[in-house]
Length: 66
Image (cartoon, rainbow, N blue to C red):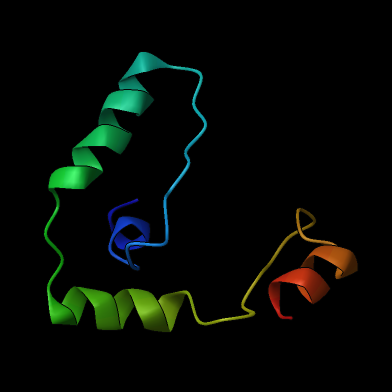
C-alpha cells in the first residue's frame, strides 16, 4: 500500500477489506516512508507484466500491458 501511495499524485490505492484490523493496517501505510533502496527492491519484485496465478486472464493482461 505504501508503495502504491508513493507512485504519484494521480495514483490512489483502493484497498478492499472485510476486517477493521486490515483497514487500520492499510491506513498505517500512509505513514510509511520508503527509501530509494526500498523502491528499488519493490520495483524489481513487481516488474511490469510479472503476473502469476489464475486471477489474471489474457484479457486482463492485454489491458494492463496496453
